Image (tube, rainbow, N blue to C red; front, side, top):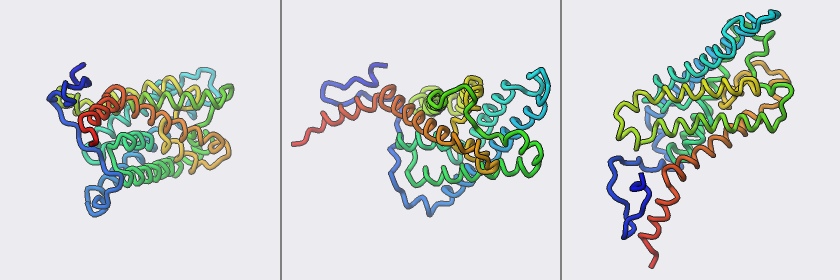
Length: 285
């Protein structure tokens, strides 16, 4: 492992068995002329729509089944809700990874933007598509099941009574860090070069990370870790309770994503060390 970070005698790095893709340009106008770009936007919109439709419907269904019953285990329970979120991410990332990268989450897109994996133009339009897809998906839930949707809170994320805003923000930061760190690790070109099975299995640890984070943070915030997931129900439900803490579900995930991007790129992959070595090997005369 040391061979990946040590600078050789003359400032050059030893040969590697993998190749990092070049950094994405900040703004690439050529993307606007490619059908593959618009196809990726459609994939992100559709995937986020399906994600919110299935997961919010699961939340509403659980609340309706357990309403007024002494046994809170009636219905799918928190475990089932966590499986719904994690399972849908696994399925949708598997389906869309080859088309759009399978982000389905503005926080994931933001982390990849900071790591120069996507351009600013693509990142912004991905986030717009994801948010519109989330709103549309929750809109379908309300259209098909309006009575239960309104009665049981619309699947909106809110800070649970008894927890401070600081605790909620911390839960969102740590939860998103786990998710985005997993995304970086599962899609690392170094790992894919050495383990041929990794590209096939990449959606599995990502979905499992979502599942585990939901188990930990559903009691605190209902689990956001995805600004689009929190925005969709807030827009369609449109009650004060859904908007009061909305900032938590944007600030927390974006901070968590930024920390994960920094940790993976500059510490685990030694980006800062490599940049310094490159600088020393090319002194300015």
